Amino acid sequence: MFGRDKANLGTGTTMSKVKNIVLVHGFWTDASSYNQVIPTLLAEGYEVIAVQNPLTSLADDVAATKRALDRLEGKCILVGHSWGGTVITEVGNDERVSGLVYIAALAPDTGESMIDLMSKYEAPSQYFQEQESFIWISKAGIQKILAGDLSAAQTALIHATQTLPSTSLLQAKVDSPAWKTKPSWYIVASNDQSVPPELQRNLSKRIGATTIVVESSHLAMISHAKEVLEVIKEAAAHSSTSSPA
Image 1 (cartoon, rainbow, N blue to C red):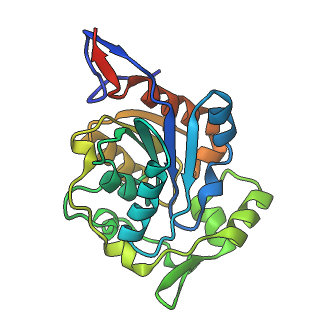
Image 2 (cartoon, rainbow, N blue to C red; image 1 turned 135 degrees about the vertical axis):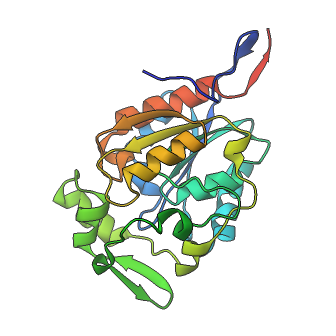
């Protein structure tokens, strides 16, 4: 199922599975957006932390993710959804991080912002409203843009619990992209109305990620939890915790 690109470690090594998983959410969601994958990971013996991003600045989200790393011992896989991809791109330089998993996520290069990546795509602004430099999304917007394959009850819950991102995040830029030195995996959500699938495919190719495509809305970790779990476990099994054979 999984191809090999930059993530291929070659021969002559014995690998030890990474047991720590840190999950990083994106705009308008919170750590509970990973609730469909966390129980299985825990049941299979992984140590899991889902970060509660404040979404107030890139520095704040990076700090929150590093605090999660500090709670764990040993190597870790970072998983980022949407905006969370920018966060793991920055945090992933930490020596404790052995692999990166992007879920319908941004994966910027040095000096690139979300605006830079998304500028050539039309944004459905009628679903958004700015309030005191934070952005909230309407229930109709969640259904249309984020969660087209989820139930009305799930959509209502996301709307009620949404974490508002700061407008400053739209122009935040990373300094040193971790995907240039760490193995990466990318899950393309082919029915995404938030981060365009064309952009996702371009980003996954640019970063040399091992890539799969799922017929999913933006929230693939909810609607396609099984596939997302497989990719996370694949990353844990094939990241750089190897030693010479």
